[in-house]
Every structure is written in C-alpha cells, then in structure tokens.
Image (cartoon, rainbow, N blue to C red; front, side, top):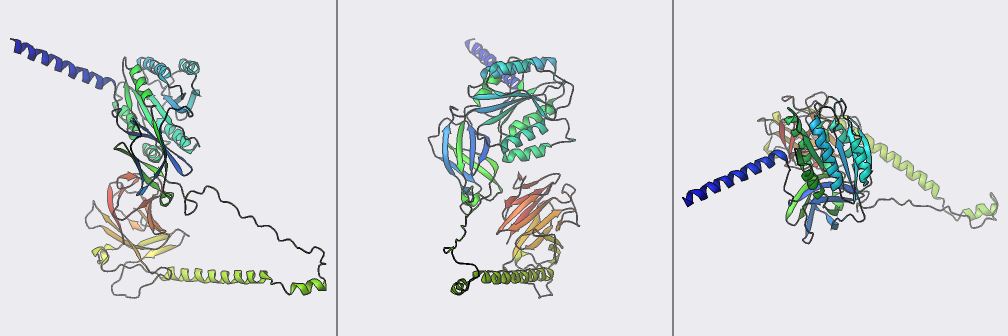
Length: 524
C-alpha cells in the first residue's frame, strides 16, 4: 500500500513539472541560456574594433582573437560598469491598428516595466514607425519624459515596414563616431507583410553580417500571425539576441531579462597589418574557453604599417638669393652664373624621356592585348579536353576594353607570352550540382571574370539555372589575390556558406554559391 502511494505521488509530481515547463514555453521564448557567451555588437574606430559581449563572468584567462587567418592583438579588455560611458537603447513600437486592444494594454505595461528596470547609465529613446521612425521621446534617462511619451502613444491605420526602419537606423549607427554600446528593442506583431518597396530581408541580413547590433524582439500574439512572428524573431536570432512572446503576467520578467543584457564585457582589438586590406573577414574571439564569431569589414591600410591615419605633407621652402644686391642682367651676374649648374634643363629632358617611355609601354601593352590568347597546359588539374574550356570575354578593370578568352588549340603552338609577367595564373570553376560542367580561365593582373546567364556581358555563362542572375558576380585578380564581388544578384552570392555584401577575398578550394548552384573554385 505504501509503495503504491509513493508511485502515485511521483507520477503527480512529474506531471506537474511537465505542465509547468510547457506553460513557460508558451509564455516566454528566449534564444539561449544566460551563461553562454554572446557577441552583441561590433564597432570600428580608426584601426581598432570594439567588441561587446555578454555571458562573461571574468576576464582572468587569456583572450584569443583571430581575424581571417591572422591573430589580432587585444588592446584592452574589461567588464563594463559604465562609469564613464553610457549605453543607448532604442525602443521601436509598432503602433498600427493591427495590434489588438488587449496587446496595447500589455505593451504599455511592458514599456513601464522597461523604464522602471532601465540602468542608471542607460539612455532610452522611444519611437513609432511606418517606413521611417518618429521619436516620441529622444534618448534620455529621465523617467518622467519617457513615461509621458508612453502616455502619448496612439495607434493608427497604416502598414509598418520594420525592415526599412532597422536598415536605416543600423546604417546610421555604424557610420557614427561613437564607440558606446547600442541595442534595439522591437515591440510588434510581426515582420513586414511584403517587400514591394524599400529594403529586403536579404539586404538587412547582409548589413548585419558586418555591422553587428543586437535586436531584441517582443512579439504580440494575434490571430493568424505565427508566420509573421517567426519572421520577427529571425532578426533576434541573427544578432544572437533574446526574443520573447508577450503574454499575461510576463512583462516584468521580460524587462528583468532585458536589463540583464546590459552586463557587458568590452574587448578592443587591433588587427594585424596584413589583415588591413579593405575586405570582409571573419572575426573569432575565444574567452574562457567559449568562442563566438562574426563578419567585419576591414579598413584599408594607408601604408605598409597599416596604422597611419594622417599623411604629413612635405613643405618645401623657397631658395633665397643670398646676394640681394646683384643687379639683374649685369655682366658680373652672368659670369658668376657660369659656375652654377642649371638643373631645369635636365628636368625637362627627364620628363621627355619618361613620356616617350610611357607611350612605348602603352603601345606594347595594346599590341600584346590584341594578340594575346589564353591557353591551358595539359597537366592543369588533369584537364586537357577542349570541351572543358569556355570562350568569352575578360574585362580589364583599367578600362572598357574586352579581352577575348580563346579556347586552347593543341594544334597551334604559337602562344602569346606576357612581356611583363611570364607566370600564368589559372582559375577553374567546377559545378558541384551539375556533372561534367567545368570552366577554365587564364588571368593576369586586374582581370575580371563576369559570371551569369547573359552571354553578351558574361565571361562565364551559366544558362542552365534561372536562380543565377544575368550578371550574378565577378572574380577579379589583383596584387596576387583573387576577389569575389556580388553584382546585385537576386539570390545573392556566398563563399563557403557566408553571404557577401562587399568585395571579399576568395582562396583556392572555396565553394561559391550562386542561387541553387555551387561551384568549386580552384587556382594554379
């Protein structure tokens, strides 16, 4: 009898635990546990990168930072108490009439809880939005001003374009000189309903890849808006920020969790000189055994050291005539001038020689381009078949001249040799989704290979898949490195699974994704 009673109590207790956990999952959603390392924001100031993290209890152990393949030096690392700096929180409120009366009450409770829980070093701004944001109260720590803004909140009939508003605000914040921490809290019933005009989700995603800024989303549950809430919460997931579903009796708990996200660590990194090349690179930071990563856009180094921010002009002082009493044109003056060498004649002669040499070089280059034929050696990646080579045009970036790419002809041994660099560089693109599709190209300095469906404007034509745009992307070669640039394609371009927004360096062995197609990129 005692045994059956114990089993009964165990079943009741287990059932109660399950019900409690399920009720929590219905009321509040968070993206990750609080003790995990999260990278919230990256800001660049000059040559340095400011990285803000949560989930850091101490900074006693070594911190490792890798930008691309180069190690970055840690200039400073600290747990912030914001005694000298302030943080900014922008609260974006969807004030469209699609928000139900019940949720409007919850939003007001949510906002009051946020104001009550805000930190002493936190400046908060409250705004509503259509396709532009309108401030009800600009950034302040004054609770009375913020509360008055909440009381003035009115709901109107309009469509909300959250993606446009987020893109413009993040772009403006990234361009500012401030290195302080910024975050966005969005209260809405979902993402945009359409993308007929303005910025798309893909464009916002590309911006966030290199300009990380946390977006905390609080979703209002309405009838049949589950898909829109998923779209809303995707903003938080991409920025590694928490997201919540607004339910009864949970407003204070959400505000408390958002307040926890203001306990930050800041690490200031200085990239190595060879990493300062103006391209997008992956940043990976390891703190206390945990690693996080994001993409950042590197500054362009001004010199070999990469850290000079100013160029000091050379000031040339005029040469003064020491003997001011010598009369111009006098016989004495002319006789003394015979002992002085007139360098102006040599300067003019030198300029003339340089002009003639430049004209000869230009003529040789033009003749060389006219005659040049690309060819492939029989041992290049084991490919010797003529059918593996595509005819097309490579456009030189120094002008609008089109240089034909001619298939190698094994019967013709008259090959054109580059007068300036006898070393040939080859590119192979091999389709991973389509068997037997291989294209090879020979490239020189500043050459560009345009890839897409349009045979009139593309060097490499991919006409078997409409997910590839007419002019999708281009590969360029300069300074001994290869670079990939998206040309505004519809479905975007990726390197090894990462979308690219700007010109990005690509290395042999990488996989390029264009629409539904993937291509292995190899060089020799």
